[in-house]
Image (cartoon, rainbow, N blue to C red; front, side):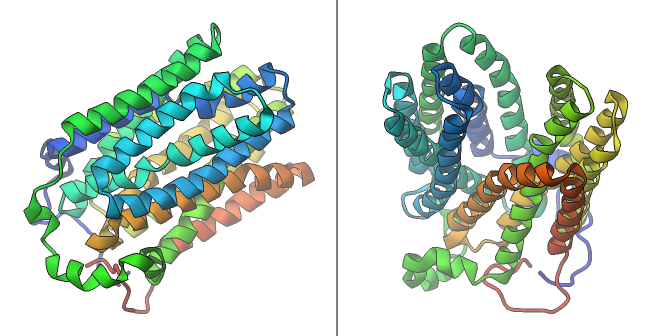
Length: 416
């Protein structure tokens, strides 16, 4: 990261609205695919209820979910490698088809060790597509503002799919878990079909733009992940991601515990999450357009700070109106930081390592969201004040890790 001035609108950068309109078809195809996939993404949400309904303890069900979380980390790493070696399109198709097959057999699996194995494999295969999908977006655009617009559209599709999926999944779970998991498998299969039929490789001119650099890097492909970690800017970004995701996941760990402790009901917690989802659906694209004028490092820092402040203030609230106000704060931070993070990482990655950079990002994301419930729950048991203090301190750290370093250094993927 250099000490260049903030990235303001310039003559060489299209306005955010123009960037949205000018996005190539590949961005819309992948976004359509992810919308379909997220509509049917039932297993991670309902596996706890499914297993406890079959008579397993909450601890056993949590163990299965934990194994799936570990699979998420591995899946992102594998997906990043395959995206750079097998190609974006077929990595996504492979992920979708294998996930469909594994998810479809979940209701037929009996012994607990087999359930653990199958759900763990689903955790792997269901994440393999993520680095490849992000790489498709990055392959398709050229400027920082176009990258931000592409990821904003992608996240918008994900959020719509998740909102619809929650409603559809609830209806299916109330009638039959077999239908639920078969519906999940069908959505994955349709995702793979959409990508296989509609998505095409990018024009060779786009892929070969840095052909000389690609030839120089070919000898390093076998150690691509290690080479990516030689980029200090990437390592700093990954550390920021782990810390920031630990903070954000307290919205589903510390927040519901606090809601219960102050005498509110589970339905009240649902309303708070519904407020978050509604705000993201309605406002994230306009917010992303507003922050597109600023240097991404500073946008990330502000976003992470707002998330931490909003969640830390939870400990000082007791009623629904104050809690709703804290949700407004951390949701604003989420809307600022989430699209910017993916787009910014794209500016760090050299062309031969785009998939691996995205794979490391997905792994860091999974580590942060996986450690959050474990650490957050344990700290809350010591004292709620301790968790909210930790959230505030972690937010400061994640913001500091976003800021550009003063000392110039040569790194693999230093943005221009």
